[in-house]
Length: 100
Image (cartoon, rainbow, N blue to C red):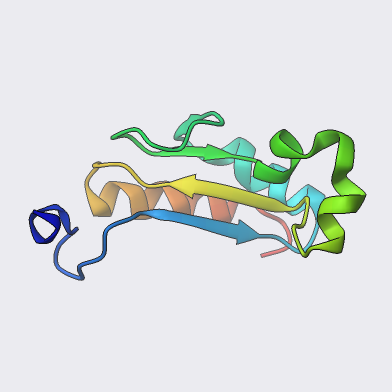
């Protein structure tokens, strides 16, 4: 059953990844320009993004940073949208980041 759920053509079971930016400003510019749904729940069939550390550890950012969890982190859960559509969405968002 697992083999039937792999994303093609590269395989793999999940589409969850994190991006860490050089500055809070870069992370905010990317997140604001990213034209996907925004929210803390990462497990739908459409793409979602959230500023993970800010949401999960807002009152303990210093503690989180001690463990390498940076506040400039944006977490993305990729959905079932067309790959080329998603690539364009991410390119456009990156184009809005001054530090890139």
